Amino acid sequence: MLDKSSKIYVAGHRGLVGSAIWNNLMQRGFTNLVGRTHKELDLLDPIAVREFFDNEQPDAVVLAAAHVGGIMANLQYRADFIYRNLQIQQNVIGESFRHGVKKLLFLGSTCIYPREAMQPMKEEALLTSPLEYTNEPYAIAKIAGLKMCESFNLQYGTNYIAVMPTNLYGPNDNFHLENSHVLPAMIRKIHLAKCLNTNDWEAVRKDINLRPVEGVDGSCTDQEILDKLAKFGITPQAVTLWGTGKPLREFLWSEEMADAAYMYY
Image 1: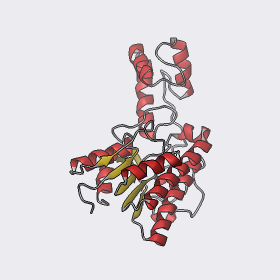
Image 2: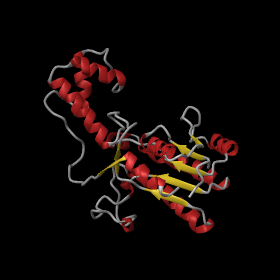
Image 3: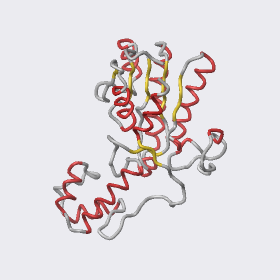
């Protein structure tokens, strides 16, 4: 167990997972947490990441930063999902090793398991059959990160652990209609459809002013807003959810996942 004064770098400390872990560690008395926004530190830049590790010399690292998104984003931006995640992992895990980080927690997702994996899934199912095509690039990147941690442990005796939680939800989640996770996308779709159904245009415009949809915000005409929301399956009469409806899903509250992550530290 790390000392409460140990310096812990939480990559992605403002996101759904990173903020939950950050708050959990703070509540447990860890006083030396380090976080950087994307503007302050671009994790895709190997030189910037190396300079950050040179300056901060963290004792432990939580790698919760990632390029993430929902079904539509995974389909449309496949190159981004594999390239960006591989690069982030390469930079952060590589510098953690070079700087002698004592513990590293790498976060991923259960989408790394095969599309037809038996439910409930077992760890042994990894790489036994094809992945879900929709998010295959993201899954492959996360599998590579997991195997990188495993390989460093086997070859160099490091203490890197990979955690692959199921569908997370909680504070600081992303409600973007293209690249959010399942639950927040459903919540926002249902909210907007209800507002349209009750003709509550004030609420609709307030929502899309906060989170514009492909350039459409509250200043646009009613018809422009209706047309854009319909593209995402949101109408006054119905909500369309993507997918076949066949996969089973379990949802995990982000703060409970943070409780489990604490046991590692």
